[in-house]
Length: 190
Picture 1 (cartoon, rainbow, N blue to C red):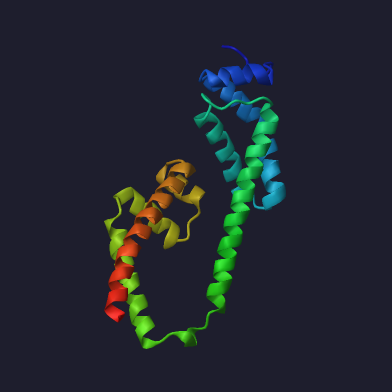
Picture 2 (cartoon, one colour; picture 1 turned 45 degrees about the vertical axis):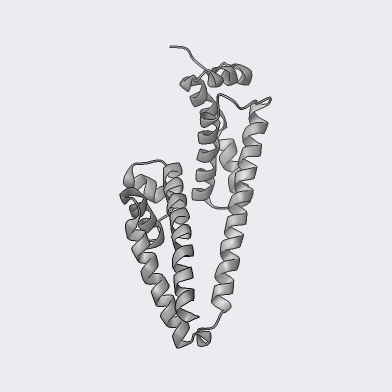
């Protein structure tokens, strides 16, 4: 069995592009901690930093055949920084949305809007029940139980990327469905 610890980054990249799993494993072992630290220095969240590091390497493997990498360490660090920025942007948007929601007062609710909100929630629950079984289960774990991606992945013995894909799929389906029943509800109140 060949030992990859003495390979240069260029030799490892060549092996990676040819689908050599051992070359990928050596890249992972060599750079995982550095990528984790890059993410952690910006996120200050161990679990999220692990997710980002895993996503960097999952992407590297998935795109191994057609990505052109000149300097491996720079490529991985840049990928991590982009994922960190995306995570920060999502967190900021979520925080801003939560703040706006918190600032809206309950006294603004009228009987009509309360009724409309109940109807929307009922229709939404019906749409959730129509989701494919695996997708519905993952979505409910995420939404109802507040489980993190890694927790869901561990519980269902799947990858975190699969969890993210299933949640994205559920949200896409629900978004499309919500358009149709929002039009229906608007017609009720016109």
